Length: 164
Image 1 (cartoon, rainbow, N blue to C red):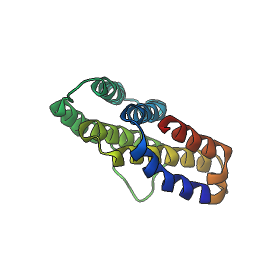
Image 2 (spheres, one colour):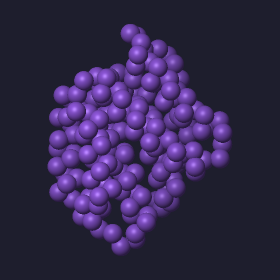
Image 3 (cartoon, rainbow, N blue to C red):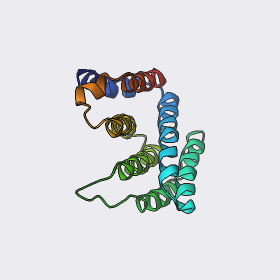
Image 4 (cartoon, rainbow, N blue to C red):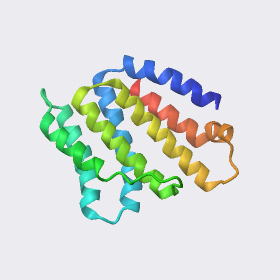
């Protein structure tokens, strides 16, 4: 758990000190890494395309001098509709879907306002997703074991590397 706390403590500082291009690349990369979970679990091709198109749109907008705010707002409204309703009991699949949709929503908001907190959230969602995978694979794994697991440490290192 200490590795996670150290990661989170340094993440905000690292995000705030990173070049805008690195921030944008990190946000897009994480969303692209979460997309296959969504694609695998959702059967509606329109929804699948919407998530993919939203990521592509943001990547294209990052290269422009002015963001199309109206289109971002439209995409936010459309992507929000893809969020599963949260029930008291959540399946792993719903958790993966929520993570993918949440990351894309944060990406859209980051594209719109460049607020670094959105990138921090995207990074945290990626960490949550790895947590889900490790927990799903092993019912008896503890939080300490999750955050000391080589896969989790590798993910944290990758995020740090993208931002440096």
